[in-house]
Image 1 (cartoon, rainbow, N blue to C red):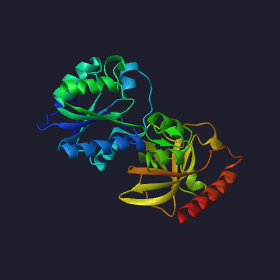
Image 2 (tube, rainbow, N blue to C red; image 1 turned 135 degrees about the horizontal axis):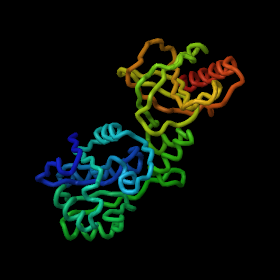
Image 3 (cartoon, rainbow, N blue to C red; image 1 turned 90 degrees about the horizontal axis):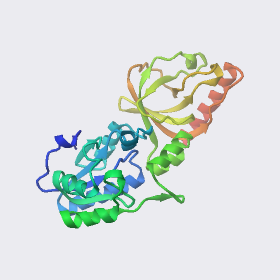
Image 4 (cartoon, rainbow, N blue to C red; image 1 turned 30 degrees about the vertical axis):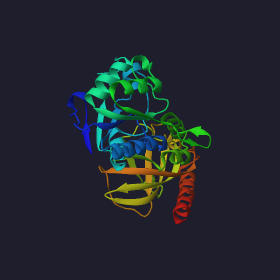
Length: 304
């Protein structure tokens, strides 16, 4: 997969491209439907599959709004590659967010990207102030020579699968529901750092992770921890460790039957099942007994 990091770096595709446009944060089931349509269109028309995506998030660029992202840009690119995308253009969008919709369609889509097909969600809006919709895009397609494929949203249990809903679910620790909308478990990456060794004192040594992701779901979870091409069952606690007084949120993972020192290494943690909320215990001993129960529940979960 070829990746370009700015519009001016993009090499024009002589035979044309099928282009999907979006943030694609999370690469959830709705995104996957759009990208499957993109790849099918590219194969049918013998075009290159091209994804135009944004980093930072447009809300941060245009309105300075804080948006916590489901994935890092590296995770997004890895996921796009796995879905069979051939080319990705990652841009802040500053060079064309101020363009009227018709100018964007003519100069960027048809001109620079040589789009012959454009695949978007059916609520897609574009152009300055996002004042152009699918009907306008279809009109531009007739003028500038590209077909438009508008993909309807995916629903799960009556709700539209969306990145904003995912953010809400993950912020509440509802990882099972989030996983159903992603089509896979939610995953974070991070670097293992030196902790205070409280877990070892309690009889349950942990790795402490400094996350690269912006969303870390609160609670205690059955997880898997992947390192060095190996995957291990684990229990992960995310929160401020209230038993030991107020503190910063930490990510502590007890990897079952694991004794290696991997400080400084990168790990991936997948969230499989929420076991409970984090809570304050009367003493470290009471906390240790609860962790023992958490580990037994996790072993039962993995045993199934």
